[in-house]
Amino acid sequence: MTLTLTIKDHRFEPAELHAPAGKPITFVVKNLNTSASEIESDALHFEKVIPAGGEGTVHVRPLSPGRYNFFDDFHHATQGYLVVP
Ligand SMILES: [Cu+2]
Image: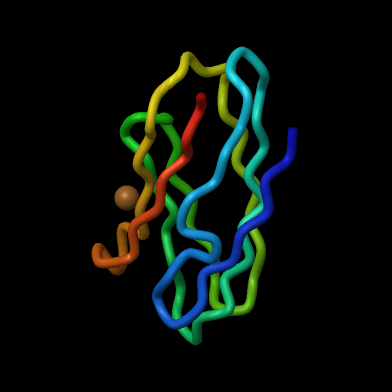
């Protein structure tokens, strides 16, 4: 499934996303900030720089139930969660 989110004013919108267990997930991330962001997750094993005004796609393997953190590695106050029930 595909989840779409934006980064604006250094916040993820939405800051919490939901996805089913056991299915591959694609994140499509639009950066509406005026500076670059790097969406990153240790738990989900991705890291991608997204230029200001740009868009990036990251793929995530099928997941077990849990609450997975991701963040903007260039602005650590920008935090988000993927919830897999
Ligand atoms: Cu990084």
